[in-house]
Amino acid sequence: MSRLRRTAAALAVALIAVLVAPLSAQAVGYQFWGYYQLVDDEWAFAVEGVGTTVPDDGTVQALRFAVSSGEDVRTPRAVLEFDDVCADVAAEDGSKRVALVIDPGRDVDAPDGEAPLTPGAQCVVGEPGATTLEMVQSAVSDVRTDGANMICGLAGFPSAGCSEEVADPTPEQLAADESIEIPVIPIGTPIVAAPSDEPPPEPTATDEPTEEDTTAPTSEDDSSDEATSEDATSQDATTDEPTDPATEEATEESTQGATETDPAEDQTQAPPSETPDEADTEDDSSDGIPPWAWAVGILVLLGILAFVATSARNRRLEEAQREATSDQHDNQHNDHHWDDPDGGR
Image 1 (cartoon, rainbow, N blue to C red):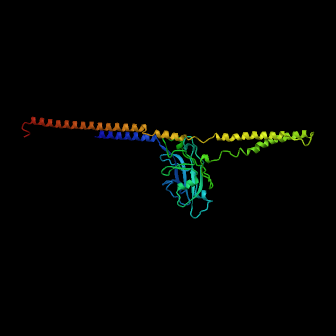
Image 2: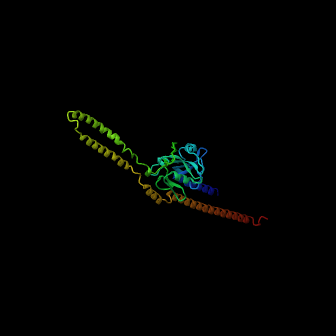
């Protein structure tokens, strides 16, 4: 029996090692917007969702997008108190003020082909019974949620998916955060805006440079005017100079043509195509039982079969040993009876 127990214990240890090793090697993470609240000057993960939480006046609520794995909790990378955000906003009857902090995360946290938005904080004013989700919707231009009112995207980031699984987070994604500065955005301006809502990179620069562009040719025209004026002294004072306006118009047209090319160059930097949708469908289609799970199942089955076979073999050995002991005892009794015909009397 001791050998059977040792075998069973060794088998159990082997099964535990086989089960734990793949789980430790496959550190599954998730890519999502986390909801946090400032408690005692520290970020704490909210116990309720944004759709059911009704924050009090004077509280600080935050959202952080990141890749989180296991016990790795990704809080906002800066701590802002209520007075840091809402000091200039006076309290009014029938409303409440909530400091909202949004941290879209690092570049390594963003899905492939997308870039995180700029972090921001703002004092949001709403109804006393407004939920955190309603406060966020009043401050952000586009809020995408799922059926359970979980925030999936803010201002178009990310463009698709909701709490997507990351099978094997990279070392960069698992690296520790570095503190950043989150600016306070004035009321009336979105904390974060979708790329399509942002103005072109330099829309007014193409109109204003005409002053710089026209100053250069006018200086040349002035020099030419001075040269021609010296020649014109020998002619009538009423002689016109038709070539100067023509050259000025030509230079203006050339400069305008040069400046009009800048928006075309800016338009070449179009927002990324929505290929993450296709990537998401491919990831979803690949869901199933991983290979290591099959290996674990086969090892467990083999272990059970070995345990059963060992138990049966030990039982047969014990029965054979008991039968041999019984036969030996009977033989000794018979031998003693024949050696003593009187039966020991």
